[in-house]
Image (cartoon, rainbow, N blue to C red):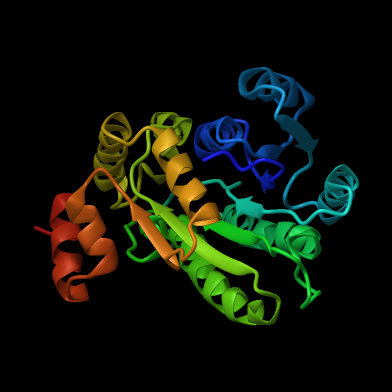
Amino acid sequence: MAQAGKAVVVTGVSTGIGLATAKVLAAKGFRVFGSVRKAADAERVAAEVGPAFTPLIFDVTDEAGAQAAARTVEAALGGATLAGLVNNAGIAVAGPLIHLPVDEFRKQLEVNLTGVVIATQAFAPLLGAGSPVAKDPGRIVNISSVGGKTANPFMAPYNVSKFGLEGLSEALRRELLPFGVDVIVVAPGAVATPIWDKADETDTSRYANTVYAPALDRLRGYMLQLGRSGLPPERIGEVIHTALTTAKPKVRYTVSPSPMQVFMSEYVLPKRTMDRIVGKRLGLIG
């Protein structure tokens, strides 16, 4: 169903889930404002998505840039309420935690968690937060992961960011109750996006002299396999559309090509059992 006159902001639309979401929402009648960090990406995405798309050039870790983008959107809305904010921008940092450079860990949290706070603070007033009498308040959709409920070895920075996002979303949903602004989590499993290709480019040579080297190679192969069998990113875009428009949305949508992954995300097996399963799969234990 077309959402005539509705506008939504999606962060991180240069590739993957963000780009697919922009296309899905534009096709369904939304006016889409999408964040990218480079002017070249703004031009490319605008050409791909079409006239319903307006690029916003800013980095989610830049408070001044996010606030400037919010002013641009506010001017374009002409007094209307923003229908949605989709916090999608993110990165994935991998490596054994006891050897990982701390600056890389900080960068992971700065983008995936602090960036969500910065974008949310910038755009929340346009969604109706701060005005209990706002007509037709908007919604916030935070893109988590099945890795926001279960963690894998060597993915600690990413898992920490997504576990944190789950808690942030729950607290924020309750804080925004006075304004009627809902907060919904969408948690994808494997999705066929460029993030998986980067697994093959990840330099693990710095860990070659550690006990983790063979397991890191196994994990890289597993991630590449997941990417090849992953859902098309448009599938996640459709779920995001549902979260933004359905009358009574769930608080969390898990979307995965693997029923077992959904089961493990929603109904976690005993932790010690999972430790043994994962440890044996990666060769960390015999």
